Length: 343
Image 1 (tube, rainbow, N blue to C red):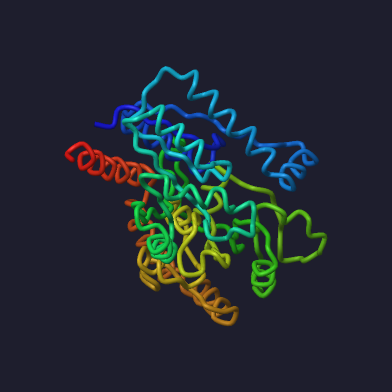
Image 2: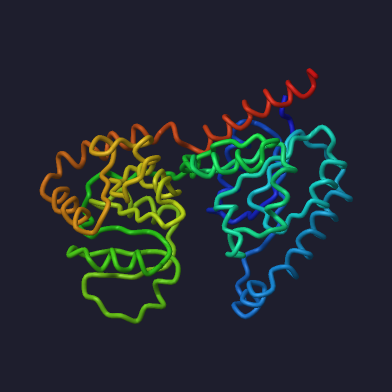
């Protein structure tokens, strides 16, 4: 039985680890959340930590050492989300302290991108073979990790959507919002694609406010979450998802957040997304700007077809929740623990 779980990660309301925390609690499993990092609001301090991350990593490791030295709880399962601050010594200490616990990592980025210190680093990369289970969101990355780390159980764990938001109301599906909705962080590729669309856009996410370029059919906004996000997705005729380079063969969080919140998904064509949401049955996909604009024109001119695909996408998404992902993790860990103790 899995009775006690320790989660180490970022406790932001809309963080991946918080979605899993709520899901494990819903499963009636005692779950302790050790908040390793706070959101840094001071820009100068945040920039310094970005330039000198190793200084911050030493501090974060000391926080975990203090926690495990002072904690009297015992855990069956320890889940670390990403954890770029980790090193082998710290993981060995965790294993020594919690001898009966399995230690797993849920990694939401590409661990092979060592040159980008915000995504991975060599010290962390060397810890991968210390985990009992390493969870990754991409089939391509799973195969790559299995070749590199033959003694670690590498698990394919796709993203999902949070169905435990407990909103006290639901929005009617009216599609009254005529603009193309895009929610995501700015980059040049995304900006180019959005600029190619002739219809009005409603753009939300990080770093868009840095663009001081006037465009009458584009509106930039900061991050949106919760009720506002749900209302935008449901009321928009199209929710556009533009995959970044690291996601091109796979999917991202918006793949499920759009469909799971009754949005119409129009997304960069990819192998994995087609596995989850069949193209032209449960989603729309495109490969280039020309095809994207053709798909938008088709959706705008064929609302009945679009709404049928929206509904089918939502029905398919209902099984891709973090609650179901949490149940999958528990069933997997039970099997691994059984094999360990059966030896």
